[in-house]
Length: 146
Image (tube, rainbow, N blue to C red; front, side, top):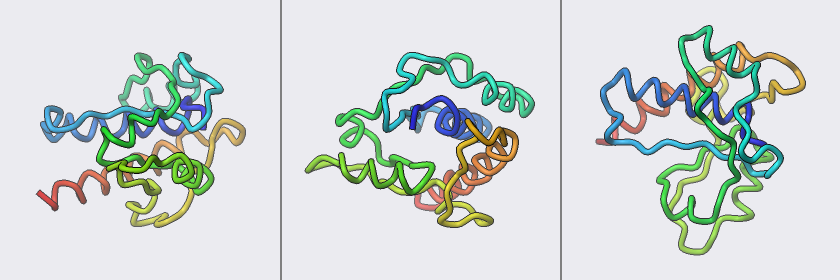
């Protein structure tokens, strides 16, 4: 929603996966929120701390809101939960090219579910593990298509 917890975690996780697989040149990755609550802010300190325990640094990221141009630029726009998926579908422009879907559609363990928002619940490590696992499966699904 605000691009300070789940989405930056997913961006960092996916970025690390493509780096490990020497695929950085083939991907342009970004994260954005459906709301403008935190535009320009870094990821939540708790998200950064959780990512750091897994060897990832999210500190260079800055929150931004989804822009119409994203739907013409990115092949995939991945939502963390059903509410954000519906918001993305509402603003999807005519002629957009992005496939819009839930991250956990790629999860073997949590298929089709919502990534819980750790902002209030505080389950940052649990969310990291869930997101990293789904990002790994997402990457594998893209590589299989090539």
